[in-house]
Image (cartoon, rainbow, N blue to C red):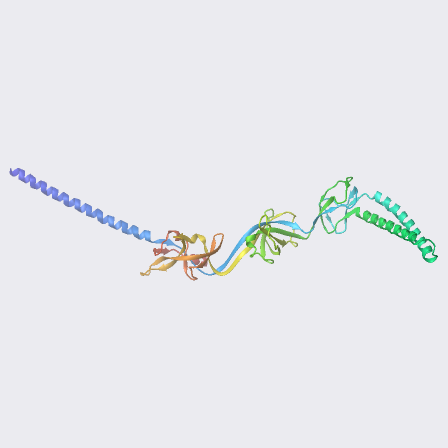
Length: 369
């Protein structure tokens, strides 16, 4: 019995020591669990950010339209008489001066007709002058014979003049200086009055025409500067002025016409496609922010600026903003931000109001460097 009592005491002591050891292990584990979340909480609350000083600037918006190169001197010259093409004095692609003959129509029959009418006219004139003399000076003959002779002479003279005009029109001449773009007939082919024979394009009076959407009717004015470039040419962007703004809207595509004078530019070709950038809005001394730093939150728009909490620590301050017009990635902030404030840019997507932040380096400082 004594042996059993000693074993029992030993067992109780062993269990007691084991319980104390287990308790110490548990307390040690709990102490470690409290320290780790405390450090993690500090890391989550502090976000590295960059800032940019807010200052008023100029805001511009643009619209791009596609135009076509035209010329006011682009015409089809038609024949005015019937006849065979006798010869061309100018080939396609060659330049001509105003008044220079481009092609000649066979005038042999017209010349014969002119000779015949000259004889008839001379005879009619002689008969008219004879009857006029004896009727007025000698009182011989009747007035009706005298008048009939007069009218016959005038008709013959008129026909002769018409033939002379037709003879002149057998030479198709350039009404202005330009380039022969196209010849419609071959030598020996018959042409008829009104049939286009030659396309002539002026070499100086070029312009670009384009249609601008009707919603910009109040934004585009004559004299506005535009930027022009061509996809088919390796040239710098050209800056020209709008020389004409249409006063009507095309009901089919809801655009209005503009024209840009290109007379002094070289390398223009009719029907070339031109890209045109027009300024549709300009605002001065406004706050312009990139849309990537504006956030939608509970039906409103907010941005974050640099501030301090009661302990003097740097924090993010959430500010509700009212937005104005935008272009590409920039938007005008009409209210909510003030000049001189530090707008949080990089890192702002991870912020909430009052969150601790760490400003790595402001973009204004980087720009100054």
